Each structure stands twice: as C-alpha cells, then as structure tokens.
Amino acid sequence: MTAEVTWLDVWTPQEGADRVRALFAGTFEAEPEGTWSAPGRVNLIGEHTDYNGGLCLPIALPHRTYAAVRRRDDGVVRLVSAQEPTGIRTVDLADVAPGTVDGWAGYAVGVAWALRQAGHPVAGFDVAVDSCVPYGAGLSSSAALEASTAVALDEVFGLGLTGSDEGRAALAALCVRAENEIAGAPTGGMDQAASLRSQDGHALLLDCLDGSVRQVPFDLAAHDLALLVVDTRAEHALVDGQYAARRASCEAAAARLEVATLREISDDPRGLEWALDKLDDEVQVRRVRHVVNEIDRVTWFVALLDAGEVGLVGTLMNASHASLRDDYEVSCRELDLVVDTARATGAVGARMTGGGFGGSAIALVAADEVDRVAQAVADAFAAEGLRAPAFLVATAAGPAL
Ligand code: ADP
Ligand code: MG
Image (cartoon, rainbow, N blue to C red; front, side, top):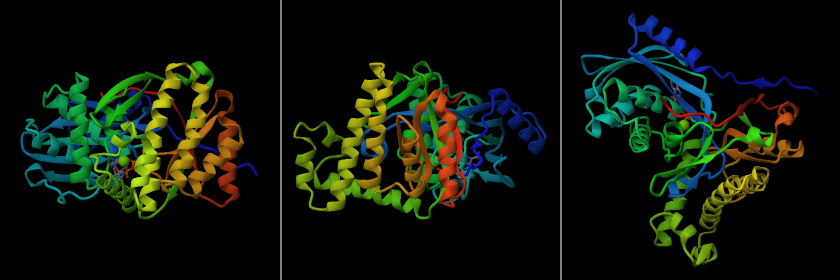
C-alpha cells in the first residue's frame, strides 16, 4: 500500500506579513501600524522537565504566527484570526481577569493583561492573526500567538523589551502568565522561551531553574541529516488532566524528598537511587526517574552537539522516548507507531516531542532518507486505519520579531 504523504505548508515572512496585513485591512478598514511574527517550536530533548526546574532543548520552527496591530485610544481590544472564523472578538481591557475571556482570544488579550499587571503602559489595540504553525499539534501554536502579540505590543507601546535577551525573558514570563491565568491552560515555560529567545541556526538550551539560556549551534544539513517532524493528528481526551496529574505527582515527590524542584535531585551527589529509595509510591518512583534521567540526557545531547557528534544523539532520543512511554506514561499508540516505524526504516533516532497523548514525534534521519521515512510512516498509519499524519522538516529558525 502507498499512502499519500501530506507536507505542511510553510510561508515566507513576506507571505505571512502580506496575509495578515490584508486580514487586518479587510476586518478593521484601516492599515495596521506594522506586522510582527513568532515561531512555533519543536523540542529536541528534555520533555516534562520545564516545570521541574530542569533543562530542555527546543528549536524555533520556520513556521510562524503573524500579527498585524494598530493601537487604539481607548481600552478596547478587538481581535480577529484567520484560524478562528468566528468574526471579531471585542474585549475591554478593564474587565480582563482570570476566567473572563474564553477561547482563543485569551491567549492574546492575556499578554496585554500580563504586561499591564507588570506595570507596562499598554492600552487598547486592534489585532489580526494568521498562522502556518500547525494547530494543537504540540508545536506550540499557543506560544507563537502569545509571542507575536507580545513583540507587537512591545513595539507599538514603546516598551523596549525585545532589544535584549533579558527583556525577552521578561516577555516570555508574561506570556506564561497569560496562558496560565487568562487562557487557563497549564504550561511550563519552554514554549514561550523558545519562541522569544531562540536564534537562527541554534538550539536553545534552557535552564528552567533560573531561566538562563545557552545558544547551541545546530546545523543538521552540515552532517547530511534532517529532522522530520510528524504531526500524528491524534486526538485524545483528558490531555490537560493528564498533564496536571504529572505535575502533581512531581510536586508530591519533591515535597516527600524535601526539595523545591526535582532538579535538585539531578544535582544531588547522592544520586537518583538515593532519592528513589526514599519514595514509597511506585508511580512517583517512575515519574522522578524519568525527570532526572531526562535532565541528564539533555546534558549529554548538548555535549554531543558541541563535540560535532550529531549522529550519536539518536541513542538519547530513543532512550527519551522509552522513558516517556514507560516511566512517564505520556505516549500513545500513534506516537509509538511513528517512532517504531521511523527507526525500522533507518532513522538515527526518534521520540515523541511535546506533552504527549497525541501531538508530534520527531525522527532524526539521513537527509536523503526523509521521503522514504515519511512514506513508511504514512503507510503504517494507513495500514492501521489511523487518520493520516502530516509532515514537516524542521530547521532551527529565528525568534519573534
Ligand atoms: P499547541 O500550542 O501545541 O498548538 P495548544 O492547545 O497549547 O496547542 O494551543 C492551541 C490553541 O491556541 C488553539 O486552540 C487556540 O485557542 C490558540 N491559538 C493558537 N494559534 C492561534 C491562531 N493563529 N489564532 C487563534 N487562536 C490560536
Ligand atoms: Mg501550546
């Protein structure tokens, strides 16, 4: 059987800007003051580590969300999105508080709210949004929406935060607040940092304990390799509940171990075994084992990149997937099928990426094997009667601007 392989579109910055400018003009009958954009992201390794004060290693995707913005003289925000054909949403900034803005608008309005909470002089605005970041695919369309809004408001209201990494880190933290408190979605901080603080051609080593970053050169083409991203298009219920349960488990284990975050266990000279021995809950044992080992894998992954041994990171990707599947229990049939099929077709390594229960998986493959691996995955999905997945090839792109 030969299934059809669907490749996801990517727009050039000019295309994205033109589209969103036209949407703005057609909706609000005025020209925007400018257009801004922010990338989705894919995490190379370090999953479910961000809310444990750990390490992760995302890259920004060439797929971006575009925002066209014009300031208003009142406190009103009007929003329109090409991805949400429900027309114009109107929100009064004075009324915004946790639980008051439902649906997608909360992600963008939440950023204005968080900026105002932090004392920044942000008032009303009109915003139009269009995006080629796959929606709800675990590639962080939500952070791309927040970050594109954040850099737009930064410039329109003259806040001057985007000019430095310190300012961008502050914006990322406010985007996290927007997503947690106004959109009401739990998120750990990796996505917003990746969208705002990445650099072209680099992976972002993010230390979630103190928010520090290191830019790690990441050029797969120089090694004749490519990163294939597979959006499983799987829809599983209870994703947020499962995420919350994992976080709660980690917090309970940290409390039992008398540490602020599980990061302290990975830094503790007594080692993982000491910590696991102190836990009497078998589920917590497995959760902690995943988190601590995963943080170590990020360190090894970066060491291999630094040494130019990119071909060797596959083992770490495979180990990460096994740990997420068996110890953290966040994989699913579709993610396992991508990973198993890609490896059987010769991938150097493969793993689920993002929170799990659907979303996307990544496979590191020889550059001239991309089509063959994608075909094999598409065929495997068709053979199992699953919804057809979608594919893209990821390169390390630039940040929100
Ligand atoms: P992911 O971030 O992995 O794509 P999430 O569930 O975190 O998935 O975020 C998806 C949600 O973010 C959408 O349901 C929508 O509410 C909002 N969103 C993301 N991109 C856009 C967009 N371009 N226009 C409107 N809403 C968006
Ligand atoms: Mg998201």
